[in-house]
Amino acid sequence: MECTGDGNTLEDYEITTFLHSEENRLIRQKADTNIIELIKRKLETEKIHFGTIASGDIWNKNKKRITYLNQKYGALCEDMESVSVYTVANRCDIPVIAIKGISNNEILDEKYHYSVSKDMQEFTEKLIKII
Image 1 (cartoon, one colour):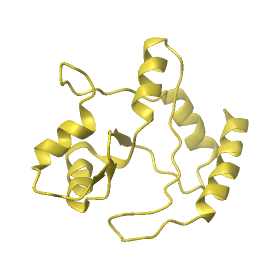
Image 2 (tube, helix red, strand yellow; image 1 turned 90 degrees about the vertical axis):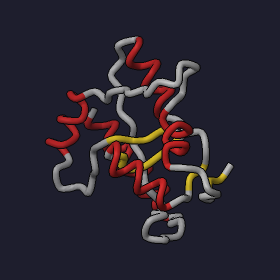
Image 3 (spheres, one colour; image 1 turned 30 degrees about the vertical axis):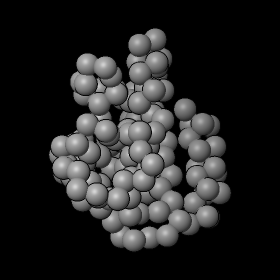
Image 4 (cartoon, rainbow, N blue to C red; image 1 turned 90 degrees about the horizontal axis):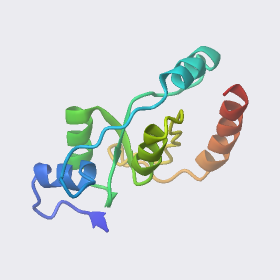
C-alpha cells in the first residue's frame, strides 16, 4: 500500500507508523549503545547517521508525513522490519543495531540509486569485521 496523502490527518499517519500492538501503544526499542560507540570510534570518517528509525506497515512516499515523523520523533528514515527484530533482541537481551542504506530520498525527489546496494554490501562487511 502506498500513502498518497488522500486526506488522512497526520495523527492517522502516526498511528499507522508507530503503533504496532492491540493496545495502540507506542513501541520504542533501543539499539545497543556499546556497538554504536564502537562503530563511531572505528568509522569516524565514514558518512554515517545515527538516530531513530520509524517502523510502519505501509510504503510511504508522502512528504508531509515524512517531515512530520522527522520533526516529532527525529526519524531519519522508515522501514518495515526493524521493530520486530529489535523487539525480539531486546526481550532476549541480545545486542542489536539496524543498518540501513538509503537509496533514494522522497523529500529531495531523488530516484533510486542502484549503486547503493553494492556500496552497502561493502560497508556492512566492514561493520561486521569491526563488531
